[in-house]
Each structure stands twice: as C-alpha cells, then as structure tokens.
Amino acid sequence: MQYETHCAVRYVLSTERLKFSIGRSAILHDISLRFRPGRFTALVGANGSGKSSLMRCLIGLAAPEAGRVLLDGRPLASQTRRQIARRLAYLPQSSICPDHLTVGELVELAGFARTGLFGTVRAADREGYREALRTVGLAGKAARQLSRLSGGERQRAFIALALAQDTPVLLMDEPVNHLDLKYQYAVLDLLRDLVTGQGKTLVVVLHDLNLALAYADDAVLLKQGRVLAQGPARQVLDARAVAEGFGIAADLRDLGGRRLCLPKGAQMIGMP
Amino acid sequence: MRFAGTCGAALALLLAAAVASLSLGATPIAPREVLRALVAFDAESVDHFVVLSQRLPRALIAVYAGAVLAAGGAVMQGITGNPLASPSTLGVSAGAMLGMLVSVFGFGAGLAGQGGAALAGGFGGFALTLAVARLTGLGPDPRGVPLILSGALTGMLLAGVSGTLLLTDPARRAEYLSWLAGNINHFYADRLAVFWPLGLASGLILLALARPLTLIGLGRERAEALGVPVRRVSRAGLAAVVLGASSATAICGPVGFVGLVVPHLVRPVTGAHLARLLPVSALVGAALCLLSDVLARRAFAPFTLHTGVLLDLVGGVCFGTLVYRLYLRPGARR
Image 1 (tube, rainbow over the protein chains, first blue to last red):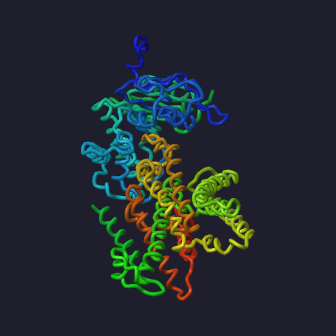
Image 2: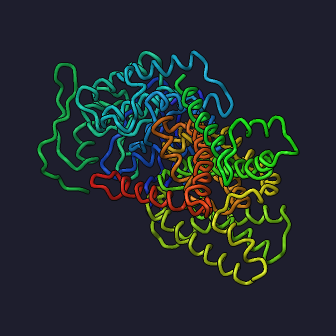
Image 3: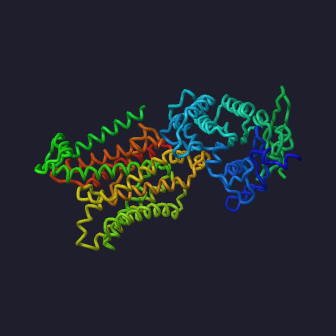
C-alpha cells in the first residue's frame, strides 16, 4: 500500500510488533497497529484479551518487552511525560477519587502538561476547562466535591478532565461504563463530534459491540493478546469474528441504516 | 476570594495563639508589654527579658515545628493516598530522633553534625518503614493500614533503640531525656537558629510541586498520563518532607501528630489541592503547636508538661477517631 512509505505523516499513533508481558505471562504478542488521524477506532475483545494492556502501552504507562509505540512518528519511549501528555489524553478504567477535591479543581489540573510547574493559567485555558465541563453536562457542578458525585457524574468529570487536556489524540478505556443509557449515548455522541468536528483521533475500548458498530469508524478485535482483525468497523465485526473473538454466536442485522449485533442467547460455540 | 479569607482566618488564629503564648506563663505579661518588648526592648525590664529570651524563642520553635510537620503530613497523605500518613506515623520523626542521639552519644557531634545525622535518620526511618511494609508482604498499596502498621512498628523499634542508647550515658541522659519526649523549650533556640533554612527550603520545594503532587493524589497512572513524572516528583516531595520534619525533630525532639491531624482539620475548608491545603495547614499547624505549648505549660501549673507529651495525648485521641471514621465505622470506605 502506498501510504506505508510515509507512515509518520499518515499515522498519528502506531505500534510495531509490540510484545508485552506481566511477569512470565505474555499479555500481548506481536501487535502492529496504525491509528489514522481523525478516526474513531473501537478496541474490542473478550475479557483478558489485552485491551487495557494495549492502552497502557499506547500511553507509555507499560513498557513493552519488545517492539515500540510511535507517536507522531517518534518513539514514545524517547518523549518526556509532558511531551506525551500534550499529544495524548488517557481515561483509565478505574479512578482514585480523593476527598475534598472539587470538579472544577480536577479539570484545571489538566493544564499541567501545558503550563508545567511555574506556568500560569490563561483566560483561554479557563474557558477550555469550562467548555469541557459544559460538554459533559457538569457546568453547574464545578464547585461540587468529586467524592460526593454519583458514579456516572464522577465518570463524566473524569471524561471532562481528559477533554480539558485538549490533545489531538484521546485514549479511553471503557468510557461509558457506569453511565446510564442517556449518558452512554451523550458521551459517545460527544466523542463522535470530537472526531468529525475537530478531527481528533480516538481509540476507545468498548464492550458493547452495538455501540462500537454505531459510533466507530474502525475497529480492532483482540483475542488472547493478538490482533484477530482490524479495519473498518463493519467489516471487522461480522458474525464470524464475533464468534471467534467472543465465543458466542450472533446475528448481525441491518436495521434502519444501523448494523446491529444480536447475540443468540448464551449458548457457547466450540472454542478452537 | 474564599481562599484569601481562609488564609486570613488561619493567620488570625496563629496571631492569637502567638499572643497567648507570649503573654501567658508563670508570670502573665500583658500583650501591650509583650509588644513593647518586641519593638522597644527595655534592658532594665525583667518582663521584657522573659519575653525576648524565653517565650519568643519557645514560640518560634513551636511555630516552626508545627508548620513544617503539618505541611509534611498534608503532602505525605497526598502522595500515599493514605489518610493516616504523616512524618510521625511513617518513621521519619523516630528515625531523625535516633540519628540525632547516635551522633551525640556515639560521636559527640556538634550542631551541624547532629542536623546531618537527624536528616540521615529521617530518611533511614522512612526507608525502613517502606521496607518493613514490603517485607511483611502486606501489599504494595500505600493506601491501606499495612503501611501505617509498618510505620508504627518502625517507630517503636527506633524509639526502643533510642531509649537504650540514652541509658548508656548517665551523665548526658538527663539533658536529652526531655528532648526525647518532644520538648518545645527556649534552650533549643540555638538549634532553631541553625536549622530553620531547612524548613524554609522544604516549604518552598513543596509549594513549587503543589500541582503535580496534587495530581499524584489522583493515582500514579493518571498523574503520568497528565504529564507528571511521578517517580521524580514524589521522590522530591517526600525528600522535602523528610528534610523539614527531620529538622524539626533535631530542634525539639519528636513532636507527634501535628502532621497527622492538621491536614484533616484543614482539608474540609480548603479542599485537597495542595496549593491551598499546604499554606493553610502550615499556619494552622503552627497555631496548634503554640496552643498546645501554652496548654502544656499552664494547664497543670505549677507543673509544666512537655508539649510533645500533650500533643501525643491529644493526637492519640484524634488518631483513634480517624481510624474509627475511616476504617472501622460501619460503611467506612476503606
């Protein structure tokens, strides 16, 4: 393919033959992926398939045993934490929530990557923080304590923190967990807007294949630490891939312009 | 400008405590006379002499120890995420105490040597606490009780060794016995005069690191993702805390529990952001130390109690309350 020759321009984030282990157990084997700018990529796979480990390698929190991650064509390992944080925002799966920290204070902390130790917060930054809170529907709750919010509100506050970092690339590990139906769709609508409207690049771990099919441009299907399939979401997530990746039979149907994945109950099919 | 108001209130509290500390004593001296002693010293006046040579140094030591320890507690609780962390619960004070005693009893060190030994001891005590936590295999998560248990164990061990050391030299025993109990006293003024820059440096480093240290309170991984070099920052922060706390111990012995209690009193008012929590904790810690010192001197007159003993009493009760609220109460989160 012709764009392979100048991948630094075409891919904002990529991995080359990534291998990662925890102790003696190998978690990721030989993962080579490319994330194109301005695309929403869903990372899907069964529990334990290595999604979160891959995310942690992509942000540089986990050191790969072999292979490397490239951010803007430069090896991630050669960049400082602040350089990375100006390009990549990351929403981890679980969050520590300190007592007595307000939502407003939380979101302002996102500015550290840009200002550093002694930099000052500018008016434009403040507007950005307010905008991030408005986006997740917490504009009126900036003075509220994080630890007193409901689970869903807290998750939205942490999403606002990632948005306030104002990076071209966002990595999100199950961002719609803990959210009720309305905010699952509201958050994903918002993420979609970030991609379509602002050209941001998103890599999002999603459990619900229907959400992945509805919102993602591309999908990466992981199984036991290997890439089973990658490409446009609708091509990747077909009945065979679902069967192979999740061990469950499913019907994929088109309905009103949407592709729906309908698992056929809980009957397991033979695992290879 | 709610923060300015909070700072003002804390400052007013400190000022009131200072006035109380300077005017109350074996012979009460009117605040006006105290002020006059400070701005227009009269060499003929006994009261002026008492204020300037005894009560003022004593008050300054209390302010120094209180501020440094409270700030240290706020930072340690932030970095470890452990609400019971403080220089006195994680072996820093006990380590500094032992370091001091070793330098005096073993080598007859001068002030500078004692300060250096206290620093080394403070770092050693903290490292020993971490090592005990690791060796006992109670889990690497610093947020749980195991770290505090290790700190208590380390503290007891080091205090025991210190006590033994003290017994080896009957001649100098008396001189250091009261220091060992945490004694805010004017005859340690020369120590304050030498060691105060350490506390100042510690405070400045911590203030400069306030934002990344607050971010570390969100969890190491999230802090990394937000651009904080977590290892470097938490090491620098902890080193600054140990520096300040050890210098306080070198001055007036292990004054316990200010570092543990004060951040919990202040946090509900200022919030958890260290840029606000730190300065207010320092002010309130200084005020608390001054007031306990006044109480220790006056509550049981004509006997005077060591401030450290009183703070241990008060602090023990607070510690119990915190443990109950955070861990034992039905529905506690941890």
